[in-house]
Length: 239
Image (cartoon, helix red, strand yellow):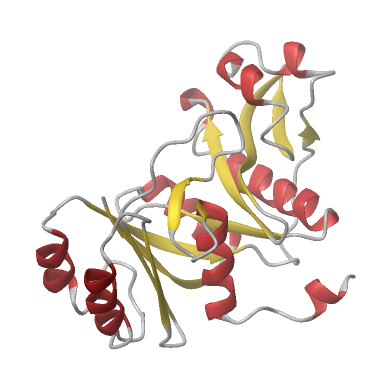
C-alpha cells in the first residue's frame, strides 16, 4: 500500500483534486477549458463552486470573469454552509446567478472510491490490442478515445464489453471516472464492478480515483450507493 493510500485526503483536498481534474488552469489559477484527455478543448464554465462535508468551500473563475466580479463571488463562497444533502443548492445560489446573469447551472455529488472497493466479478483492461474485439456491439464509439482514456476497464459477456469505466479527466494526482453500461445489461450490478476495477487500476498508478455525477442522474447515484463510495462534497457550476 502506498503512502497516498495510507493517508486519506481531507474533503477539501479531494475537492481541489476534483476541480484540477475537471478543468485546465492558467498560472493565475483561472480555469480555461474542460480537461478532456482526448483532442479538443471545450470552454470551461465561468464559475465553479465546490462545497464539502467539512464546511469548507473553494471556487474557481474562468479567465474572462472580471476581477471585481470574481472577488464578489469569492466573498460569498467563503460564507457557504456545510454540505449534508447533495440536492441542496448553495446558500448564495440567487446571488451567484444574479451576479453572473445566468440561470444555466449544473450541480452534483462528488465521491472518493475507497481502496477497499474491489470487484466481485472478473473485469478486464481494454487497450488498443484488444479493443476491436471487446468494443464491438455497442462500444465502437470508444475506439477513437481508447489511447487517451486509460485505464479503461470492462465487464465482458459473450465476448464483448457490456459495461465500461474509464478515465475521462486525468491529472498527476487524480482521475475522474466515466461510466457507461449498455441499456440491455443495466440493473445487474455490472457498473459497480467496473467502477471498482477501474479504481484499482487507477490506484496502481498511484493516483486517486474520483467519481462524480449530476443530481438528476439517479442511475449513477445508485452505483455510488451500491459501491459504498465516500461522499465528500458537491460541485456547482454556472456557464
